[in-house]
Length: 67
Figure 1 (cartoon, helix red, strand yellow):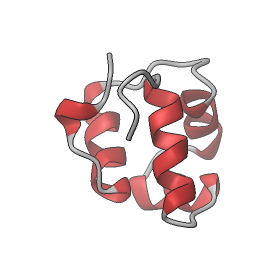
Figure 2 (cartoon, one colour):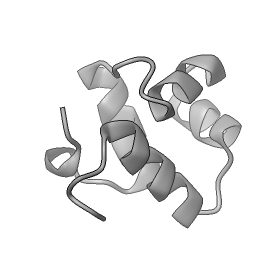
Figure 3 (cartoon, rainbow, N blue to C red):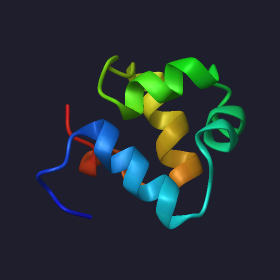
């Protein structure tokens, strides 16, 4: 993944690479779909527990997710 991406862009890129919809990621992560959409758009910053959930679902390493 590119290092100059925002967290939202990184999540979106990983989601698309896995062929998942926003709804699928939200449900698998136990996050409200609207919240996940806002995180992808960088309208809302994800909490650390949410980042952990998303990293697990999207096969990302937490250390590679920008602040």
